[in-house]
Image 1 (tube, rainbow, N blue to C red):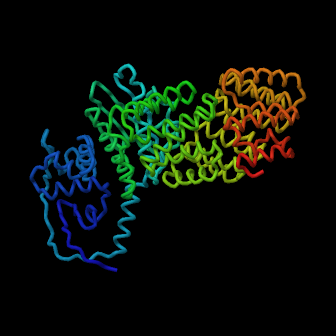
Image 2 (image 1 turned 90 degrees about the horizontal axis):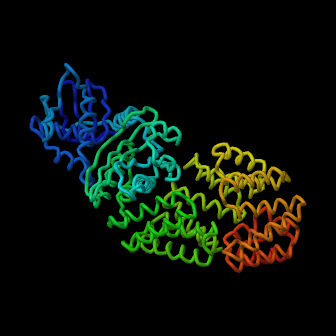
Image 3 (image 1 turned 90 degrees about the vertical axis):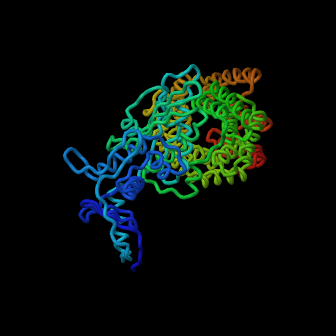
Length: 594
């Protein structure tokens, strides 16, 4: 098949510039050029020997994007290399200091007669260009930016900037972007970018520094190829703080370009989307996310304060409402807030986010996470599916949906979902531990032990895999090993009550009745002082074989809307009660199938 085109051909020296085919040939051989570098060459060639101003070049090359001069300088440098400029060689591009550039070689415009172009030849050229230009990068990590000369209270800014860019880039379906939880450990340090990339198992790393002084910011940023340990793109921005959103726009779009990604129109719009134009609200949100990522009760509460400040300053800030919803839900599941209070606030915040932006994946996922724990099963699943449809790269949605599927007894689906979360962040100790949790709930105990032991090796000082490992050991009647793991988990975490409960259950099922009852007495006293999960006390009575007491505490859990009741139908620690009709009745009232 053939077609006609009349776009011009230019010749200079051994080169032919084919505008219709968007390619440069040297003595008939293809010279691969990235699109923006090709456009730069074409603009210079079209201008002939006349100078073209830097501002004009940048405006025409990046019409909808704020960029610094470093981006243009990088384009010119790449073009000079492609043309073979060097000491003693032909010089094609002249720099006019502080003004612009001029093309120096004589240019010949070939006659604009119609040219016959073979379609199969075009296809072959495209393939050759893509191969020579390299395979597009498929995975990237954004390291916390290094704060320079930080003011007191600005420690949040480096991680906050990274978190904002991660949120933007994760909306591109063509790449995997490591979540903030994966790069949090690099906050406060200056790791080698390529080495960090190898640890995080990505192909490229974005790193940078940020300086905030008064109402101005200076951001330096660099995109590094991990395999080649080479800079793919770099730039510097010096702007008013109120222009931070334009800086983030520029970084996101130029990173996508440097990674040779071909974005859809929808992805381009997502990349440019701002959730607030209020700089003060944005600063409060960054602080909230900084504390959220510390993932302790104390810091979650601190994060709530800043998310509240953000929505006070901008009542239409959807992401800040998501931060509130996620924080309240976790505070309830960690027993730092009573369920009725915490879940009510979480739902209200999630609904506010969705009312502002119904296409926000994080809002749908946060809403679903709350609905899961308040036993609104059907709506929860719909919201999880909507979140994943909007953003398949959102790891928390995969992780929370895995919990939902496990609660439903759909274990194969649950394990597949948590492994999808793990693929997005393979080094996450928490996600690795959750793989073990789902295997445990599926009664695949030997696999669970292997997974959790491997997770303990990854991070010996993390309490959660040890806590879960102890539960699996109980099912294998390895009571001494279970007690040892619970004790280690308690020592590492400070979560005394949580580990004490399972120690009490281990005592109960191993025949140490008096020790188990002593634990029950302590927990009953604790429950009088603050909110405490009645479900957990029921587990000890179940281990003792005291069905009446176990059911009594489960009923209390139902009255309190205990978040742990999502596990009622699948928890191995309650298997001794499965034949009791009172348990089956409670399962039905919670909305689960017995």
